[in-house]
Image (cartoon, rainbow, N blue to C red):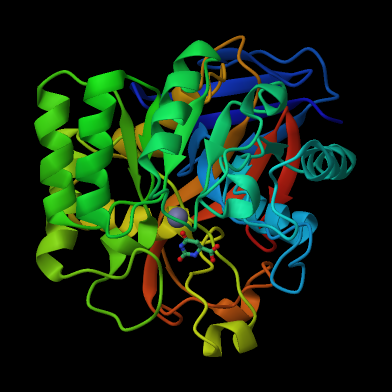
Length: 389
Ligand code: DOR
Ligand code: ZN
C-alpha cells in the first residue's frame, strides 16, 4: 500500500503555510485540498493533526566515506542516517579512498547507491587529481556523471586551476564548490576572480562575520554565486572541538544568523563528517550531524524568530534550485519527497542512538527542538520514527 493520504496537516514550504489534506499517489503529490474524499480504501491514512508536512531536506554537502573509509561511514549507514534526519538528496564529497576523481570510483558510488535505493545521490567529483591541488582532472569526461565539482576538505590554492574550473563551469554548465581556509582570504580571492572571469561558484561552510561581509559586498554588487552554512556553526561557538572551518566566536555566529535573516546565506549544508573515535582522537576534523541537523537548525531558528518557511527555503528549495531538481516544494504534480515533523518536541542529541557510524558530535546531550516523524521519498515511507508513528 504505497499510496498515502495525510489528513489535516500543516503544510509548509518556502512559500506556503496552510492547513490541508495531502494525497500521495504513485509517488507524486496528487492533491493538496481540504477534506479529500477517498473512494479507494487501499490508501494509508496518516493523521496529520499537530504535525507539519514539508519538502524533504536536500544536503549539498555530505561525507559518506565510501569507498575506502567505511570504518567511518558507508553508503548504507550514511543514507539511513540522512533519512532519519529527513534528507532524501545527498551530495557526497569526493574525499574518499581512492578519491572520486575518475570514472571507476564515480560508477562504484552511483551503482551502489542505485542498488541501495535509499536516497538520491548526486556524487561530487574532485577538481584535482587525488585532491592534490596540483593537477586538474579531465573535467569534460566526468561532466556526464555530475554537475558538482569540488576539492572539499582541501583549499584550492592554485589560482590557474581555479580559473580553469570557473571557465569550464560556464562552458559545461556545472558548479564549483569551494572549501576555503584561511576562510576570509580565500573567499576574498575567489570572489575577486569570479568577478573577473565569471563562473558558477558555491562557497561551502562559511563561519566568519568577515567572510559574510565580503559575500554581502559582492552580492550587493549583483555578482551571482551561492553560499552555505553548517548547522554547527550557527548552533555553537568557541569550542575546541576540531571541525573545518573551526568553531568561531559568538559575534561570528550571531552575524551568520543575521545573514540568514537578511537572505545573504542561501542554504544549510550539513558537512556531515563522520569519523571513528580513534580518528577523532588523532585530530580528524569533523562533526557527525546529519540525523540531528534539522533539529539543530530548528532550535536556532525558533530562538531567533526565523520562520519554518525560511528553514524550508534553506534546507530544501534553495539546494533544489542549485541542483536543478524539480523538488523542494509541496506542490501538486511534484514527486512526493516529503518529511513529516513535529515542530515543537524537545529532544536531546544522543550520539549513542545515531544510525551513522560517526558518533563524533560535541553537542551530545544538548537540547534540540523538533522531530522527524517520517521521511517519504518518491511516495514511499523511507523512514519512520519508532513509537511516534
Ligand atoms: O570538518 C570537516 N571535515 N571539514 C571538511 O571540510 C572535511 C571534513 C572531512 O572530510 O572530515
Ligand atoms: Zn569542506
